[in-house]
Image 1 (cartoon, helix red, strand yellow):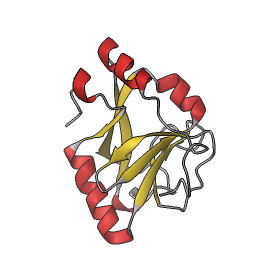
Image 2 (tube, rainbow, N blue to C red):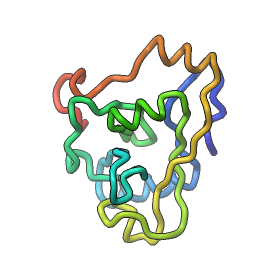
Image 3 (spheres, rainbow, N blue to C red):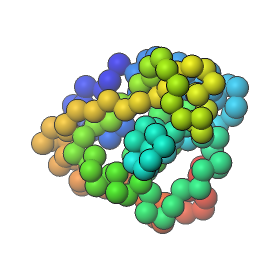
Image 4 (cartoon, rainbow, N blue to C red):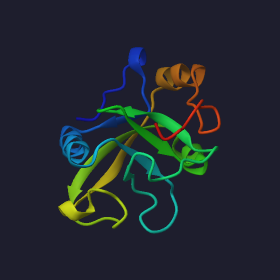
Length: 142
């Protein structure tokens, strides 16, 4: 279910039970994965699930947080500017999305549901801004 978002545990990213179940299946089948949401064309506004390291994270990409299985969720800086005041929840629905995302052969696609952050959540999250690809030591893919 989507995160309720109380001020004591503000997060930018969450996942529904159904999407978490699919994520577990994908990790079991393929190994560690990551998400990236670019906002570009070709389903770019949908979260894309890749084998970890298959998609090169850029220096300006923003790490919103981790989903189950230590799965990082990255977003392009332009998209983050647009979505910075929202809590995003990864969900899954029937239907094909992009052929680039790992779930595509399953006949389902990941999508984002959103809600506005509360004032308390914004304050807490602004006090600890997300890291970017440029700020991470080592390989940002991990």
